[in-house]
Image 1 (cartoon, protein in one colour):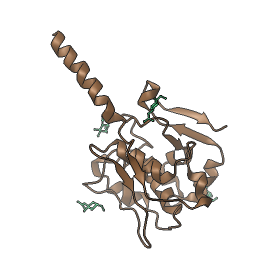
Image 2 (spheres, helix red, strand yellow; image 1 turned 180 degrees about the horizontal axis):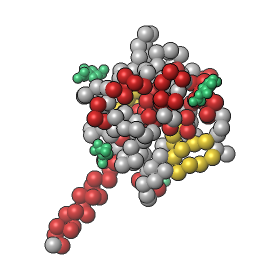
Image 3 (spheres, protein in one colour; image 1 turned 90 degrees about the vertical axis):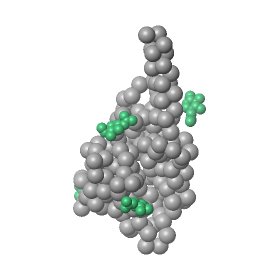
Length: 187
Ligand SMILES: *[C@@H]1O[C@H](CO)[C@@H](O)[C@H](O)[C@H]1NC(C)=O
Ligand SMILES: *[C@@H]1O[C@H](CO)[C@@H](O)[C@H](O)[C@H]1NC(C)=O
Ligand SMILES: *[C@@H]1O[C@H](CO)[C@@H](O)[C@H](O)[C@H]1NC(C)=O
Ligand SMILES: *[C@@H]1O[C@H](CO)[C@@H](O)[C@H](O)[C@H]1NC(C)=O
């Protein structure tokens, strides 16, 4: 009995680091400075935050959000790339912002993006059973239901209007000791 209890504790503890994966997220994108309002409260670009959040569900390695070439767009999820993180409203919105901040107009529409998610489609801005690395601040606009954007496609003018309300969301993080969502107002 004792032995099996210890084993359970051991597996719980060793499982924890997997939940905070995402520390090796990277991006090659340098956003245009006019879009610096898209950065989160820790001055991380939407491209980096998208990489961090996408990486949380990755079972191995890191996650990179590459820069777009002319006429490129980020691929919609498919059966080999979909997961609960990539399919969140937050990652969709952040990738849309990341597209716009590079000066590209080719933002994915939510409908085909979500359709590519198949059974991973979730109807929330973040799957709460996944915790994120320390201090990953989610800009409030990134929690918007994508169906609410005009035409069902990320809209940076609308996002900017939401941003000017000065609200930031802190995602659930292991280091904060509990799995819940905090709302905080920007100073
Ligand atoms: C899924 O998308 C990736 C990235 O665009 C692509 O490399 C891969 O071939 C696609 N897989 C399927 C099953 O369509
Ligand atoms: C989180 O919940 C989703 C949807 O219910 C499920 O597919 C996924 O396996 C869960 N992941 C973890 C780590 O519990
Ligand atoms: C998380 O926060 C703790 C306490 O503030 C700090 O010691 C640790 O280095 C942080 N980890 C990461 C990956 O930033
Ligand atoms: C988006 O912006 C347009 C134009 O300002 C406005 O009419 C619309 O209500 C906004 N929608 C959201 C969801 O903010």
